[in-house]
Image (cartoon, rainbow, N blue to C red; front, side, top):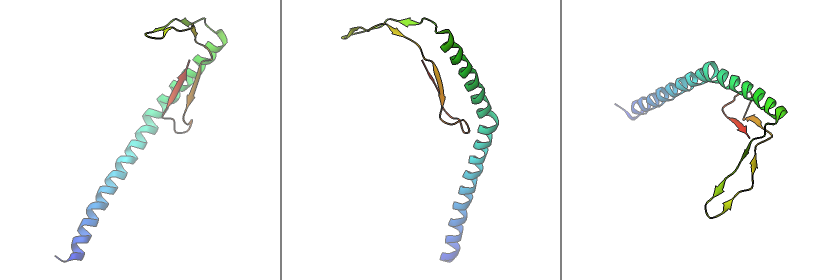
Length: 98
């Protein structure tokens, strides 16, 4: 077997690996679009409405904490709830702020 045939064989092995990786990536993308993204959008919509209601009602939620070697912290109060996402089109991250 000559050097050209050996190079062709190695190149074919690499191409097969690349196309298998591309197929796997396409399957992952399809799964994300069909299963994960709709659920993330549902969670986002629910949390958005939830935070709007909380910000309107403004519940009196306070907490008292003590840290060793520091002492008592001032009273902490939750407020200005919010929800943010990294992208509305390709959402992968939801952040709820309290």
